[in-house]
Image (cartoon, rainbow, N blue to C red):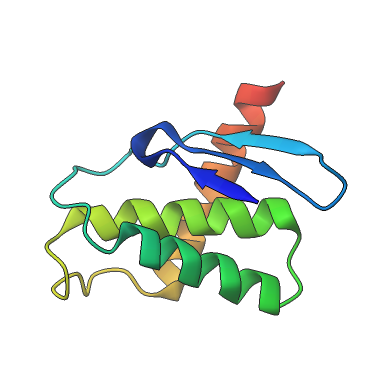
Length: 100
């Protein structure tokens, strides 16, 4: 189960009821939130279908939702998978640093 909280991140429970809280990805200017949830779900589903861990999938999905807010819907063409993966590496380090 995942509860997204927009710019405030998310709370998730896995099948063993392990709780995960992640911050939102807010490093880019906010323009419009339409499509953020769809982008989050697409990123989450893609990563899980590729066999990634729940945490990796949630981090990737958080970035997908965040970058969807940087332009008006249907016009955001500046982020492809490679760009998201570059952001993912930086975001993963940031999140790990917050939990230490």
